[in-house]
Structure formats: structure tokens, C-alpha cells
Length: 308
Image 1 (cartoon, one colour):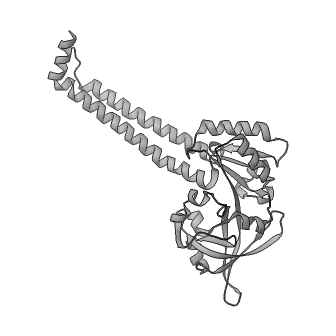
Image 2 (cartoon, helix red, strand yellow):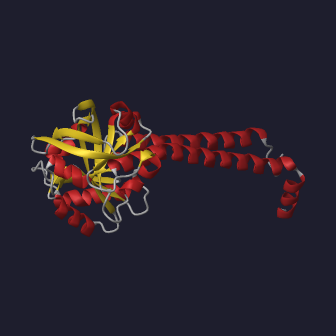
Image 3 (cartoon, one colour):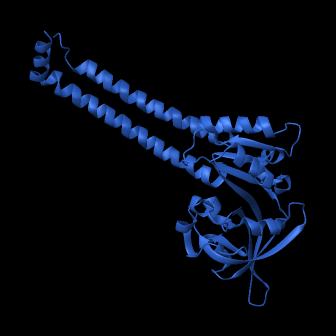
């Protein structure tokens, strides 16, 4: 009887070739759409992780409560010890200190008088330490339009649009006028080493990148930092692992009664990332369900059964 059924399937193409084609097309479409959604929305997650959130982020509780203002007066203190604790508790992760800063950028003329100036906001990262992956993580090499990445603490990168607005070129001097961590005025001279294009309007309008050592000096933030970002070893975000790390760290090192104690957040817990990750999961599930239902329905409605 089984041999009879097998012969019937191979001799009647409506019962062999067509089901195979329908299932193959359905599976192919499901896989392609799943990969497309994962790639498009996944790129947004990767961009946010590299530039803003990390896979996990450590900051002071007060800084987290006012994070939209990037308040350096509420920065994390004693970061050398915190980094040692993080490396001991979570071996294998990459940790990166960052400081968000802003101020008035002044471009002088040949007489030292102001030629042009404008407000800018920037990010201080580790550009000079041997083995640092921050320049690679932010894709600075490929983003360079003119000049080069800073090789000395006194150098700074400006967004190309900002540099054009200030009428400065690589090698020119600019002055950053800002406030220190303690509210005092700070005036620091930098040499423009190069210009970059980030590809994001907000960053290209007035963005800056400098080595964290020079910004620490300018903002009086020795052994302090705004944020410590952590990255999982394989470079891919794992929501369950990040959440477990955050819970473990907060239970051991964070004091809810102390606004300056460190707190760790996973990528999902920061900003609008919860909504973004939920939307990504929703769309993937929806697309898979639609194509599976369409495939099963088409097969059921159009193909004859073996008993006919």
C-alpha cells in the first residue's frame, strides 16, 4: 500500500511537484523577510549601542535620572575602582568610559580675535590608549572627510558641516569654552586634526570628538566619567544576558538611597530602546505568521488531497 501511494505522488505532479514548490517558496519568503526585518531594525540597535547605550551602561543614579541633560556635575566618581570591579565581576566584556560635553567653539583669526563661533556638543572617548577599540567602534576611520584621527591629547575632530560653518581646516586652532564638573568656566585650546561626517543630522550639525584625557583636564573630571559602556564579547546584544548582568551588579554595588552610587542599565532599559526591541520582535513574528498562514491556506485550498 505504501508503494502504491509513493507511485501516485510521483506520477501525479499536483500531489508532488506543486506542494514542494509552494512550501519552498513560502519558506524562502519567510526566511528572506525575517532576515530583512532583523537587518534593518538590527542596524538601528547596533547604531544606538555603539554611539549611546552600549549593551549595558553604568552611571550614577542622579545622572540617569537627568540623562537627557547629560549633567557632568552628576558624573560617576571613583571610576578607576568601578572599572576594576566590573572587570572582576564580568570578565571578557569590553568597557569604555565616555563623557558627553558641550560648549561654545570659537575660531580665531590670525590676530587671535574671534572670526566665527558656534555652539557644539561632543563625545570624549579613549582614542590614544593602546588597544582601544573606540575609534573602530564609532567607525571614525571611514567617517573622516578631511585630515586624520587625533594622535595627541590636544587635538579634536569636528563634524565637517560644523568646520565649514566655522571656516576652519585641519591644523587650525579652535577654543572650547565650557564649564567644569564643578560649575567653573573652562577655556581650552585644541587643534583640529580632521573633520568627519557621522550621517546623522544632529551629530553633523555641531558634533565633536576628542580624547577623554583632554576633556577630563578641561572639565576637571579626574577619576570621574559620565558613562561607562559595556560590550559583550561577540559584539551582539543578548537581552537576557545583559538583564542578568544589570541585576547582579545593582544588587551588589548600587545603593537606592545614594544618588551618586553606580547603577547599571541594559540596552533595553535605556530611552526608547524597549519600544524598538519590542517592535522588532513584533514585526518578525507578524511576518512569519502571515507567510505561514498564506502558505498553508494556499496548499489547503488549491491542492487535491491524496484520497481524491
